[in-house]
Length: 403
Image (cartoon, rainbow, N blue to C red; front, side, top):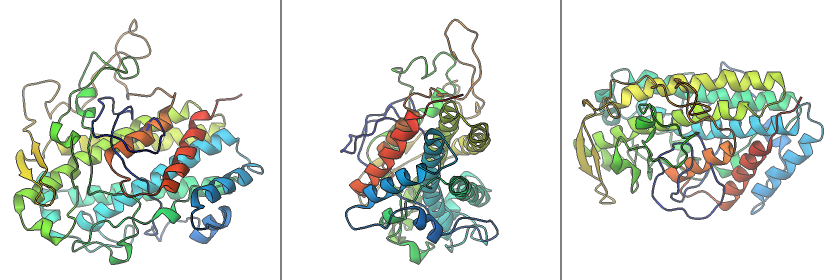
C-alpha cells in the first residue's frame, strides 16, 4: 500500500511500474472502518471513536474530522508527527479490512473471528482452483487487517490522540451476490468491482538490476498487462456473474492478483513511515506490523502464479482480460521465483542486496494513497473522503524524526 500525490481530481487509466504509488492513473474514492470486529478481541467502541471526532454535519464531514484531530493533538502524549504516522496507517488498515471483509464474505471462512457473510459456492470453487487453502488464507488475512486498525486506533486513543474514523464514508454499494452480508450492502468503503491492477511488483521483485528507490523512472513490465488497463471486477457483482464459469474464473484470477498487489504496498509503506518516527514505541509498532504485511505478500505472490491461463470478456462492460501462463523460462516472469532478487540498494556503488523495495520515505504516504486511488478502490467516494485521506497522508509525510 504505497501512495503518492494527493490531488482529488480525476485520474487516467495508465499504471506506472513502480508499485510505489508513483502511478498516473484513474479516478477512485476512499472508504472506512468496518463493524465486523472480532468479538474475542478488545477494541475501542464506535461510540468512543465518535466521541474523539467532532459530530459530523452534512457536507462538513471531512472538516469536522480534521478539526477533531487538531483538538486531540493539543493534549496527546504522542508528538503530532508520531500520531499522524499511526493515524494514517490506521486509516489504510480500515480500508484494507473493508475490502478483505468483502472477499471473506464471498470466498473465505465466516466464523466468530470474521463474521458477516455466508459464502458464495461458485466463487469459492473458482478461488480454490487457484489455491485449495484459499478460504483459510482469505480469512486469516482479513482477521489480521481488522486487528491492525483496532490496535492502532486503540493505541492512539490510549495516548490521548484522535483515531482514524472513516464511518461517515461507508456509502459504496459493493456486491449484491449470494453470500454477502445484506446489512453491508450500500455501506462499503471500497469498490472491488472496477479495479485497474498494477502487477509490475511481479517483475520488480525479480529484477536484479533496478530498484525504484534508485531508478524512479524505470518501468517494470506487468505480469498481467490487461489488468493494468480498463476496469475489472474481483468479486461477482451479482449472481449473474457466476453463470459463466470462464468469466467467473477470470474474476477469481483478478482477486488472486489483487491480493499481492495490495500487500506489497503495505510491505513498503511501514518501513517507509518508520523512518520518520521519533518515539521508540511508535517505531516498534510500525516495525512490528510491517513484516506481517510482507508475510501476506509472500503468500499471495506465490498463490497468484497458480491462476489458470485464460481469456474472458466481461459481459457487462465488454472489457477483455487475459491471464498468461507464468510457468515460463523467463527470470522476470517465472512463477517459481518468488524470493526477492538482490538489487541495488542505498547506492549503486554498494553490493546488491535482497530488500523490500521501495522504502524511500519521502512522500511515502501520499504515494500510497495515490496508488490505491489509481487502482479504482475508491471509485464512488465523496470529495470529503478524499480531503480527509489527503490530509492524513500529508500530515504523515510531514512527520520528522526527532531526538
